[in-house]
Length: 148
Image (cartoon, rainbow, N blue to C red; front, side):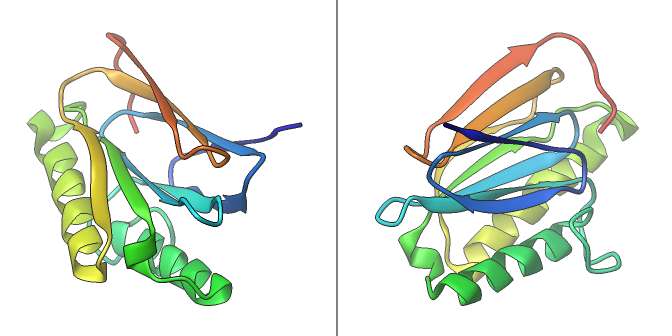
């Protein structure tokens, strides 16, 4: 049996094998972290670069949530595979999307996560399904525009 979790913009979930995390992206960015030995991981869906008010709507807030989960599980960033998605040019001529992607990559590098896969940019929406059993991310792109 699979536990299905759908993230809205600003959402965050960290779970165990048997969990599938899904989200729909436009200019927002999703970061997926997976621990291949323990089959745990999570996804954030942040909307804006920067600190904001410390919640998952902002890149730094989303990474604070990841850091808390790593501390809780006694794991280290180098043990995870990171995958980055989104950042489609939906608003502001693509400047916001590009800033979101840059924030994700900067924070992943700063915290010591290795980026295994990246699918960013473009103009269409992305639907993601992240399987914590395998670490696989299923990506579907379409031409419709969404505001994220």
